Image (cartoon, rainbow, N blue to C red):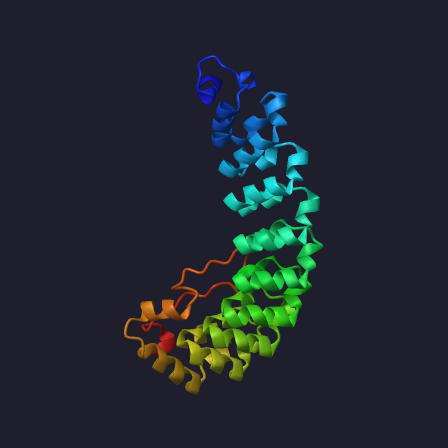
Length: 272
């Protein structure tokens, strides 16, 4: 009800003429700014303070404020998702983009297509978070130097690499060396490559479940995998420390090509 929203019985939003009550309203409901008197809607100081308390105000404020770098920056400090509602000019401003990815690399998804093709920007994002590869353009997701940077820091980032990179033995080896469970994201051919699978199993015996059916029956690989699993005094805890995708609760934001197999334990037929 409007009366409860304004805090005074019978008072309409359009009747709010003071900055303080307007800020109180905007702190609770961002779209109220479109109902305030024109004078308050155009008050830059009010909008600047409002976005510092409720970043969603940026979505509903006037276009000139969405193109105001100070206002956008203030909103981003509260939630980097505010960048989505900035003007196209600011979403294409590299200096602001660098600030945004330092706050949260998810900001990449709100940039213009032009900036998402910027190698330097993606490299900086990957420095903060290897999973920022998720927001790379198709071209950069297949840029070997960038993908190698990501998977060397976190093997599971291979999920977001382009198809060419998931078919590249050097890239996949780097990924599974860091995290054996990254084998699940490799191409079918490489999951049937004994050298690649051996590298993965050496890092984490549980990775054998992601290999081809043929290699899952390989006597030497089975022996190594069993030895590795048997060496874990507390399997779940040890797997968490080493980054197993199941024990870490890793969830893909997009469907996998091969799907997730059932997590295996020491009682599975693979280990018997």
